[in-house]
Structure formats: C-alpha cells, structure tokens
Image (cartoon, rainbow, N blue to C red):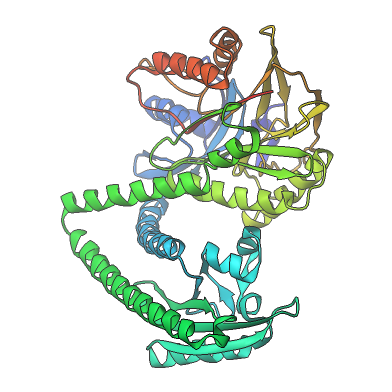
Length: 520
C-alpha cells in the first residue's frame, strides 16, 4: 500500500502525488492534484521543497513525506500569505543574524578573555571566546550546553551580578576586582570591566577579564595590565560606535536596490566564512587521520548550505561524521548547526563505536524535541542524513559504521567497491503510525590499502544542462574507476570531481556537495 493510501485523512482535500522521479511517471495522485492545471502539475513535480506554487490566486507549500532514489511522495498544503510572511521574517532574521554574527566574530578575535550577557539573559552567557574557556578550564562543549556567571566566578557570582546591574543601570563602563576560589580550591583574582552596548534588536553588557592572581603581588605589572585594559575598552567603545554607524548606513542603503544587493553579497560572503569555520571542520579530519591520508571537497549550493563535517577522537578510535541537513541556503545551514550540536552532545560520552546506536537514538530524541515532533502524531521530513565512521588508530582490527540515509563505500586494493548502508531514512524523519527505525552499527574488517568514501546526495542529485539527473549508480561507478586514478585519496577525489564537472558543464549546482576520501 502506498503512502497516499496510508494517509487517508489528507487524500481528499489536498493535492498529493506519488511519482517516479527518475522516469517522470505519476504512480498515484489524489483527485485534488489531478484537478490542478497540467502546467501546475508539472511545475509541482519539480518544485523544490522550500519553494511555493501559485495557482489561480492560491498559494501552496510543497511537503515531501517520503523520498527514495527513484520515487517521491508529497502533498501541496495551503500557504496563502505564508510566503510573504516568510520573506518578512527572513529579512528581520537576516538583520539580527548579521548583527549577532558580527558581535560573535568580534568577541572571538580579541586576545583577552571576553564574554557577553544580553539584556534578558541574566546569569546566562550568550557569547564567549576561547581565552575565557581556557581561563576557567572548561571544554568547548560546555559553551554549547550553556555557560553562566557561576562557571566564571563560582562563589563570587553575587559581585558579578552587582557589576552587571550597575553597568545596565548607568549605561556606563564599570570596573571591579573580584577575588574568590575556584571549585578546585585554588584562589583567583580577576580584574573585570563591564561596559554596556546597544544596537537594533540587541542589547547587553561586555565583560572583559584580566587574570591578576599573580599580579596582585606585583603592583607594577598590575598597573600595566590596567592601562592595556583601558586601551582595549576604548577600542571596544570605538568599535561599538563604528558598528552603530554601519547599521545606520545599512538601514539607509535598504532604500536603494543596488546598494542593498551589495550589502547582501557582503553578508553572504561572511556567512560562508562562518560556515566553513563552524560546519566544515576539515582540519579536524586532517589532524585526526593525516593530511596524506585524507581528501575533502566541500561546496555549498549557494553561499551557505546544509552539509557539515567534523571529527574527534575517543580512546583508540577516531570518528568522522558527515551530515546533510534538509534544505540548503541559510535555513539548511541553521538546521545543520542544530543537528551538529545535538550529535556533539550525544557523542560526547561515547567510549566505544558499538555505542553509536545509543548516541544516534539520543540525538534523534533531542532533535524531535527541538523540531516539536511527536512520533505518534507529527509528520516530519526535516532533519539530516548522517554517516559516522569509526577508524582504529592501530590501523588494524575493525571499522565501525552507523548511518541514517547515508552509506559508506570501501574501495579495496583490487578495485572492488563495497557498499555499507545505514538506515533508510534521515535523522528526524517520522511518519505517524510507522515504528521508529532502530539504529545499528556495522562491523567491517580493516583492510589496509583500501579507501573509504563518504558523501552527501548533492553529488548524485546534480543535473546536467538538459535537466538529466546524474544518479547514485553513476557516482558509484566513478568511485570504482578511481582505483586507477592514483594511490592517494586526493587522486581519487580529483577523478570523481573531474567527472562530475564534465557532467554538470554549465548547469548550476543542484545541491550542497560534500565528498571525503580516507586512505586505510
């Protein structure tokens, strides 16, 4: 029984169709779909999931409920006025995100411990840089879970709150020396300076910290650091003024179309840089497995996208994680960052690759909560396709692979390509009435001389100038052919991407592309 027959509640009132996406043949459709004009039907079949369809004054949003390599089932749900509201919301979000990204980048660039508490945050720290994490001795994962003033000042949080309150009340910089004891029992002394800032949709207080534990006994050095902090405060104040001026210029530039496009371009370039820093963690893979043993290609569909990559070490194994969040562009990147955060939290305590199914189950539950998905009642196609490969540093024994919607390919020394599948659907996929899939981990003998490939579906979903889809089988053929391209992973990746570019020619890139090759 097809999905259209399963969802009887949506069959009559809404246009819906199940069709052969590879052959272009409609397999089943509701009466409402067949009632649409033929041109509208054809447009709906090729409509991206994030776009809208307008038919005789009505607006529909495409909602894909099931998709395979050859078939796709979707419904057209009423969305009159929704697309206009979305555009307005996106514009406001873009302005707010631009400001927050600029603030975050500014905080990260400063060499002194620094963090930000926004107006409504109270004890919660919104932004913090690496020097602060090193000062208080907490890992980066703690920042994702949430930092508070107690993590910084431990038993002297009250004094920090008083300083925060004065800065907010007077709207002028405030300074104080806070002394106390860390949880380990070691004493500390911080010279803390809090100064307020205000910009459209964003208001809070900067906290700059100088560790003067030793300098308390050396007044000369304390005075020198105080002067440096004063200079830094003035630089921060000037930077705040420049940021406010820039925001006013942006607001004025919105009235001129040409200038607006220029500002949008600059914002997207900055977003692309942030994505490569936060989502494409290629350096982690290189540090984990070696520069000569790894090759990576990461290309977003536009400036930013939904693909992500990161790696980490736990015990005797290195873990490489490849993901493809639903959609592309800013929405895909935001969902990718959300999924990556949940995976990092779920994988933080893993001790052996055999625990990967439990970690993926935990990440799925957290993602359902964030996406407001009730497994019993909510239809969801949002989430991310995931592939996790565990590599033994001993270069022997077993490989471990767990995935959701993504497969692992191993190219043996004799040129044979082996495919290891994960779950069929992505992390976050749900259809009411269908039991949740159970995650599993594949144990694969380590064969030296082999090459492991992980990639997202942007590689196989590419279209040529004639709108012909590349397909997974062709990509698999290219992977097998890469055995003759050269011994290094970079040789094999170049071979695949050269064939991909020859197929694409001048056609625009269809989706985000991520391909990684690891030499065993």
